[in-house]
Image: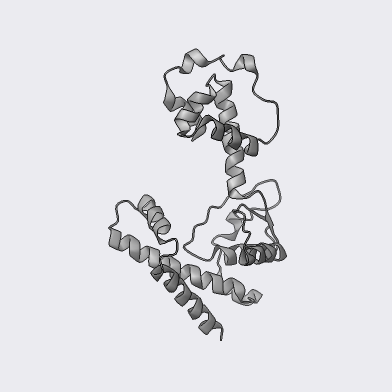
Length: 218
């Protein structure tokens, strides 16, 4: 029964690929990640990732016993993720080439305290998934979009401290001034605003060097 359900998930992944659901987005990401590959090979990888994603969705819908999870997910070496007592931690970046949900569940069941950063999911399945993550011991923090807004706010504040005007920042980012200010308003994480007198302090050092500002903002 379990294998049939997993196969159904794989076929749903194939159907999503055939129907071109976000297919252009997936292929664009693969072009950026693998520029040297041919389009045919990238499409093959894309289709396989859709199949895997469909299987992954089926896997997280099915209850998994501890022994099954232990066979499916292996940490090599485990000590890399759990070095022992102390403030040390590990930052892991995962992609859609495997079941990252099962990986997180397996780590949580072994006692590892995990905090995940993910975009906000507001649909019915997304709300179920968020609740299921909480049940398995995962703690969610700011959604990815919110985190990026906070980082951008800090970078723009830094640029303002270095003497750049709102117009100059907007030109570098390629957006209107109003858009920059609204993003900063959403993403500001607190703390004092840049001092007006300090905004031109280093202006002479960096005048005519847009690359420096790009380094602050990108």
